[in-house]
Image 1 (cartoon, rainbow, N blue to C red):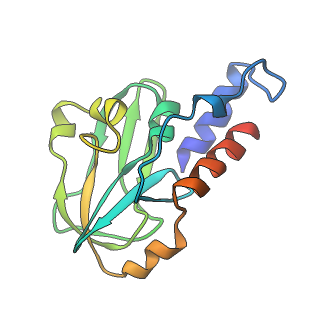
Image 2: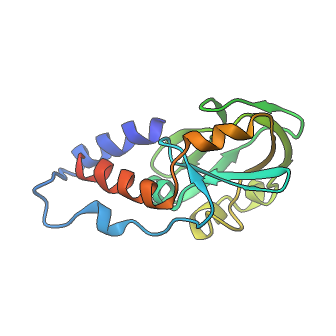
Length: 159
């Protein structure tokens, strides 16, 4: 995801390094129990026949204030690890990838008027799309909350 490239260039511009007196991983906020996570920093929570998808708290923290969100229309097909939309912040624009494949059944239209919901509530009011999964077994390839937390800490320590 473009987020990693942006985070790396932002860290370089700010002259952050592993020798800095603080660790970005200490800023890591939260994960959602029962959700699965992609390495591109999207989350998915599968409940019944629908999976809710958004970007993680970690991702929104790195992006900064979200000012615009581009989402697909209901009925669109999404594919695991492929882009379905974009998030624009005051710092950068990042593609958003789907952690699973399926058909978009609902879009969070509140994000059109209030894109900052992604910052204030990434796992509740800031969800992006709801999908009817076409291959629920794809969830098995994603990380759980503990693995994702460790992944973010290691990724932040590398930058």
